[in-house]
Image 1: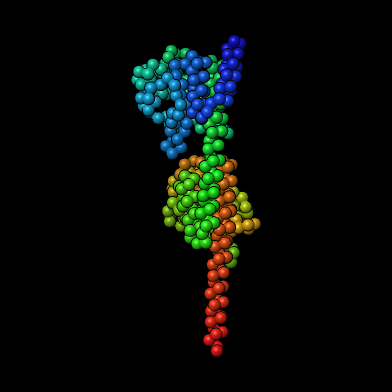
Image 2: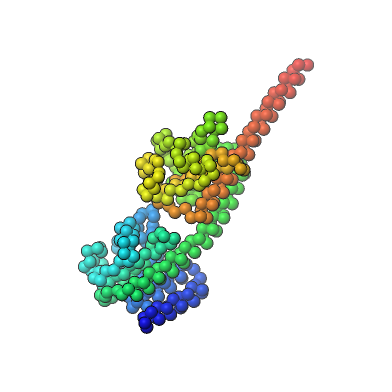
Length: 348
């Protein structure tokens, strides 16, 4: 019972400390330090995923040397699968356990046992929290639960910091991109803004714009960026369920092509090294005039705020396209009018 009270007191102190921490690094540093102090550890480290390389990267650590941390990055998929089975990974003898690598490095670092738990955010594993001890030990259920709770606190702190950062960046990005779209009446510039600039700004692999041809009752590719001609020549997206849903006003997301059993062109996407995509309607006021799609070369979680921004950009782009089209029509009408007037004058 005394141990439980100690854990309770630790969380009370941690909650108070969170209120005075100035930065995300300070918050995560507190979690790592409390893990060491409360569990009599030698060291602790918080790793976060690097989606581009499928590695866990150390972001905050105490008690470990830089040489040890960089000895061998941890692969994400294998560890996540193991964690999902049991909820944690425990290694009583880290120096000889066949599940671990770099036994000599661990021995030189003075590591005897390791306990690793997942850092979760909204059901997704975004990292791991590891505790290292100087002597061999079997971790109790209370200790495992405590480290899991600390990891949960870390996940919430990371998510809050990321959300605030995204909101600030997205607000600036939305202002910049919509201003760029609305400052031009050249349709080519507008389409370039909606593909190349949006794709680069959001860290996507590529993008495309497809507009509805009312006369033919079909949708046609009018602009693309970052993807091969072969991809578009073979992609029969016009007749897909995604396109039909987008033209009805829905935004459709594939966060991981490998896991999406409903995807109708999975193999083609994989050939193009596309792992995720989002398709949203392009609107001009109340009418859907086409679709905008963004493609990612890594599995990608489109948060609600990023999804809303992409929808807003597609809407602004649709209005800009409509304004440019109206301008072209006015110019053409003006030419016709001038031609009529000149013909009239020639009569005299």
